[in-house]
Image 1: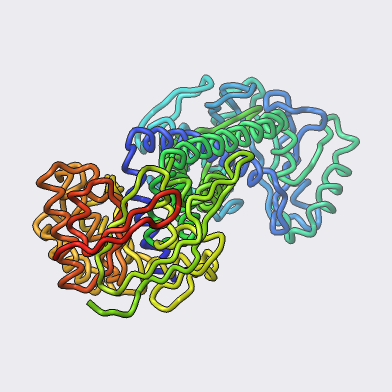
Image 2 (image 1 turned 30 degrees about the vertical axis):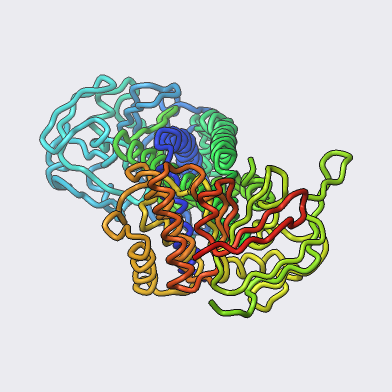
Length: 383
Length: 232
């Protein structure tokens, strides 16, 4: 049964070669639609991954209350010791942030100034994949670049570059499980403070790691309570909630792109349906001949469904892989107010894109297949 | 020739509606075709010869009467069973060959076997044998457009033969061929009947083609007019 179905599918594949140009144009249309779908899905999934709070998250961001841009959030550096003393806090790191552009942009350059001796302790998950941490610590203008940042800008260890009024030397490239880290340049805190208008002793935010994820809410409240009466009160929230709030406009934009994805899917469906209907109209007599040779009606149904599935799947594969390659190559990153989100694809998007393409191919061929199966043999032979 | 009939039509009637009118292309027809006979059907357009051929081939169903082929009343079979029956018992040869242009001669002949459970080797042996029988073993990898009309019809005959059915039906098999190609195809049909025991029912307009058959029947207005035995 399976081998017979496979033989029929192979026959369907050969039939697609019959009108090469028509098949190629359909395939191209399906690929374009699935390219768009994959790009939109990747954008949405990347934003979702960056902003969805998970049970294992243990990082808080302490920001100046009622401030939303790195250039306006100024907190005294000495808050660090106060925060460290709060029960439940495992590690704290003061961070100064400087960006080339505070508005929404597709190419945000974000510098994070951190104390050089604290970075490895605060974020042991960071892996230096090129260069070394000690080189960075030894050089005051050294920068550790996230791997996406380096690849997008074509930078390697030893290169010098200038952005946002800073001139730095690349000391290393890092890889992190946190997409945010892969999109920034870490520099030494004193270097960034000296080169920014806020000056020494002031930082943009504190990142805090708590002992246990369930402590997040309690510790956040305790931090804000501690500084409520200070001249610079704080607003503390989980890192992903902070990203979601800061990048709210991007999220609204991404939500709108769902409609673009849906439009692409509908266009692919209409294109496949139209092609398969045209194919079957031109093959009325041939299907009747196959029926005369002893092909039962379900075999004709299977032949048409196979053609739809093959068109959908081959076009879908080209489109999905094309989009994934483009995202990998261009390393597109959307940013606003110092938050940079890299648009990444993953195997789940590949699988869902291929399943969608297959489903569309099958669904679009249902009606043509039904017509082909139901047409009376004698009438079709006379047509 | 074996004397027991392969085809037995008893009071075979076919009617269908065309607009508000009922058309009866075949009316209470009785016919017996012995195994191994090469029968030609002639008659003017609308005489019911193609309708009779389609009923015998199992691609149309009679409105009344019995149609017993190889001991089985096929008028009682469901659509699905009729498809299976066709695959095993009938080879159909069309006037315009109806080969699939994108497939080679070999692949076209293989088509009826794709739904069977034969192994790849068995399929290959059967296809090669069928192509050898029609004298086209050296053209098996050619596409239809690379073959002459006569060769295309031979491929179509090989396709009709490949499942080794006892019955071949041919709807004007020489209607689209020149004289030489037609003579060659008719000679092949004669060989299949005489040397391989195939029962052949052929519809034709061409008296020359009909001469190749063992017997000639004339139809008019859905009824048999006369039966004429032809010299061997």
